[in-house]
Length: 109
Image 1 (cartoon, rainbow, N blue to C red):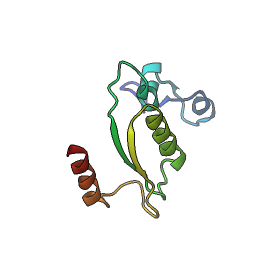
Image 2 (cartoon, rainbow, N blue to C red):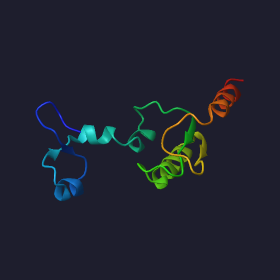
Image 3 (cartoon, one colour):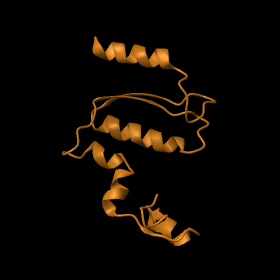
Image 4 (cartoon, one colour):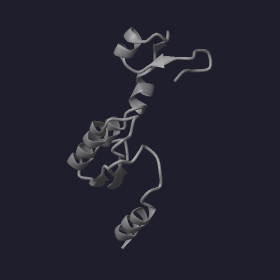
């Protein structure tokens, strides 16, 4: 991610020190926005009470550990979370829309 006058900004000290792309560190507030974990217990944030998270098992972009840690943090904060890591599914796709709508209907009853 960059800005109008600069192509690259780094989000970690490690990436800045080890990247072939030159660039400055992103501002602290921008770095904070990249990680939703910062907002779960933030009293100024309005965290949803109910979450449905699907993280395809063969997602090549994000480790399954990331979604698992997110789920644990949400549950620690008192949120209800319907979490599943579907086998052999990639990052994207509308593979379970009927289940999604049934989950929503159940919450609204």
